[in-house]
Structures are given as structure tokens and as C-alpha cells.
Length: 360
Image 1 (spheres, rainbow, N blue to C red):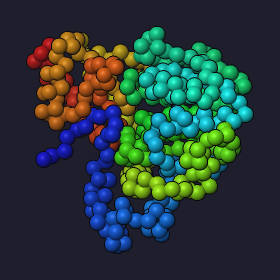
Image 2: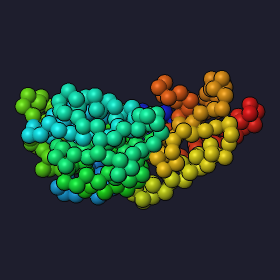
Image 3: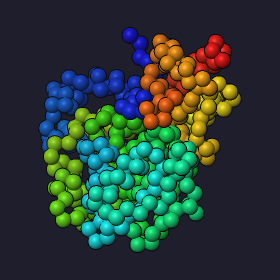
């Protein structure tokens, strides 16, 4: 069976060359006689894999030396708790920006540990836009400011990085990490679940500025302290070793494409082509404000919702899978992460045009 184009929001496609290398190394990693899944996380073989992966990630993102890179478990959702647990020991006041479903989840969890100040929300617009810098009612004395640069479900993305002065900026980069260059030094903490642009589900990437480590609130479980993982090179307990290995292969793949600048050019072409096809049609529509459109997650609706099921059935038969929109939003959603080739986006555009010709 030939591979399909998988537009899932996550777990998402992985680069085919990465999967092929993992296949070739499955039983014997570089003459070790072991699969990576069988290796001790403290053995020299896996230690070399881990070190190379971190080095390549630091190169890709130009991570400053004063930032720790942690390879953790628990998904991005665990960071909804870990961030306030680790940053509010001396100050319970925190600022949050609400721009969609994942922002709301982060806010709900933060309220268990801190006093949340909602500095802006776009819920009234059904999360179809982002607030401007001037609309952010920021606190000068907050422990941190949290936002979600890209909302996976609603397909909304910030066109700028919020300016927070001396207050650390914390960002959930789960659905946009590694899609384009970013300035890590603008953030206190960046975190991301792996299953969209990094690797398979089970790994969580955290980059945290060193001065924000070591002041967890009393009662924080040892596994929820950044200091625990920083002091033990992410190996306090057994880490998700195979996910870490595959992430390292993805980092190598990205470096081979010319780094994140090269990846960004590809992603812009994919997104622009798909949005152009939607905007040129009266049959399809995207609800997000132009300046806030995501290049990773593209939601769209059909003029006649009664055709949704037919669209999905025929798209699936054509090898275009997982296009159904999130149940809270409806319609369709095409997630076009790094591993989605341009040919996959073209195949979707061609299918959409033919579907409109027949059913419009």
C-alpha cells in the first residue's frame, strides 16, 4: 500500500527519509547490535544520540548558552502545570492571553496554582483573530506572561512576539516549533509537544532560561521541577529514548534542508497556495483574519455543510486523510506541518477544485 497524505493535527506525518532511516536502524543501530529502543539511556550509545540531538537542535534554533534544553515526558499539557509550579514561588500573579482552545486549557490549569490575570481574549470573535500589542493589558509585576503562538484547533497564529519588558514570556510552541526561525532569547520558556513538527508522540521539548530554574513552589513533585531535569541532563528517570532518537533524525533532516530559513520558505509556499485556493472560491471559506492565519493549521468550511461527509469520504479515497475539523469548530482542517510535502498540498488543492466543479 502506498503512503497517504496525512493532514492530521497530531500525531502528524514524519519525513519519509527519517522513517526509512529508523527502519534501517531498527534492529541494529550503527553496529551496536541493539535497537535504540533496547539501549540503556545511560549507555554510551544512547548518550551519543542524545548529545547529538541537543547539539543539532541548538544549531537549528541558535539556542543561547544560558538556556537549558530538556527532553521530557507528559506532553505540552504537563507544562500547563509545570510552568506555574516552577515560576510562582515568590509571586502568584501571572498574565495569560486567551486566543483559543489550548490557551483556555493552559489558563484553567494555571488557576489551580496562581492568580491568573487575563490580559486579552479573542473569544468574542470565536477565536478568529489575535489581539494587537496595544490590546494587551499586561502587568508590570507578573511572574510571567503566557501565550500560544499558534492555536492548532482554530488555525490562528500571532503575527508578532508580544513585548513583555522584564517579565518572562512563556510560549506553547507545540504546533509551530521548527516551522521557521525564532529568537529564543525573547522567551523565558518555550515548550512543545513533539507530535507535530519534532517527532512521535511521547516526547516534550522545553527550553528554559537558567535563571528561571530552581525556585519551584513548596510541595512541587520532584518530577515536576525543572531543576530535577536540568541537573540530570533530562535523565533523572528513563526518558522517552526512541522519541528522542527520532527527534534527532528530524533535526538532521531540517539541517539538510538549509535549516529553519529553508523550511520557512517551503512552509510559506504551501500555506499561500492553499489559502489562495480557498480565497479564490465561493465554495470554500476560511474564517480567520488575514493577519492572524496560521501557516501550520488551515481550517476551512464548505458553503453547503451537508457535503462535508461526502468531501471527507472522497478525499480519503483519494489518499488525503484526516481532514475533518475539530469537533468544537467543525468543517475541515488541513494541518500542513514540516513533513507534509508540497506535492501533498497540491494534491489537496486539485481535489478541492474537482470536488467544487462536481458539487458546486
